Length: 103
Picture (cartoon, helix red, strand yellow):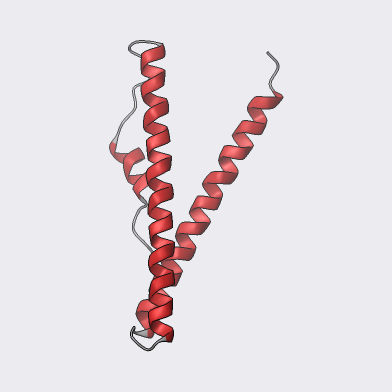
C-alpha cells in the first residue's frame, strides 16, 4: 500500500522558495520559522498517526475493529515513524557536518 504524501512533503512541494533573499536576516528568520513549523507539523502528524494506530490495535484486540483496518493503521504508523527517523538522521548528519567546518 502506498500512502499519501506526508504533510511536510506537501508543504515543500506547494511552497516554492526564492533563490534571492529579499531582506537578509528577516528573510532568513522567516525561512527558519517556516522550516521549524514544517518540522513541528510533521512531528505532530506522526504522533497522531501512531496514537491512532495504537487505539485501533487495542480496538482490534477487543474485537471492535476489523483486522484490515488495524493492519492499515499499523502500516501507516510504521511508514510515518520510518520517515520521522530518516528526517532525524538527516538533521543529525547535517549538524555533524556543520560542527566539523572550520570557522
